[in-house]
Image (cartoon, rainbow, N blue to C red):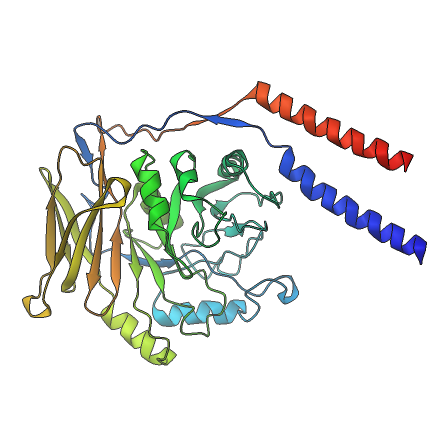
Length: 396
């Protein structure tokens, strides 16, 4: 029994050492000072959209995998697909943990291979779309800013789109301050079935990072009325084609819908209400410096949000007024302006920002650089500690 115990102890120790090793052998990054949006050119991602083409999408949801160990054990592939089709979704995405699920390949003309990366303690996760290779490595314990940036860089090499997933879900995951410096990711999951993260988005935008929104259910049980058709991404794309969906996501031709939740309603009633009550964006155009938004349902409240999450203008309307459009005059001091519309049933629509640039040639900033001297010094310390531990164990 003592020998068995020793062997088990060695196995556990080796596994823990492996997890620690994954965490520590990461380059040390230094970051440039971020530059907020500036210039006379106003970029509006919606200026030329065709409002007759909106594709209803969910990119983040889980099915039964690994023998039911992971959360999603009640979602068989067929059930998952059929429930979303019942609501009328055009694109049904599956993002199982660290595994590409190809069930929709051949069923969904816009099939996009993807997965949710991450199995660390703090749920510092990423939604990966257009996956060429699943990255098995993760940093299991506490992650520094260097860990997070390094992971985004590596995932960016293996996927067409990388989204920071539910950054507000766990304190210590992606801190709001992290978004000031992190770059090289494409979109941010601002709306998630568990938690919304506008503070993270505003921190990124306020520091000149042009990242657009994505809205997902993060489904774990499609048979529950409070777990499906909650947060929806609508993409302006003529066809349900993967390349068109990628282009719409990356160019900001997307709106996020936070659909009003009634936990007591039956699923059939929710499906009916979803198909009847979802609002659509008709247009969002710049006329000079005036940003004019027009939608298909009467607006209850319109908010225009700018630097540091400051509400630049808020208007409330009466139901009897039947107001379908609203506008904001963008001021020279406004570095970006994003819009949130709330409707009388409690549903809200989130728009991507209008941003300032020097000209129409927009370059997304990168702030990260590997510090080779600091990396060598830190790795030297780690190797020395490991060597000392091995010597002490051998002596013991």
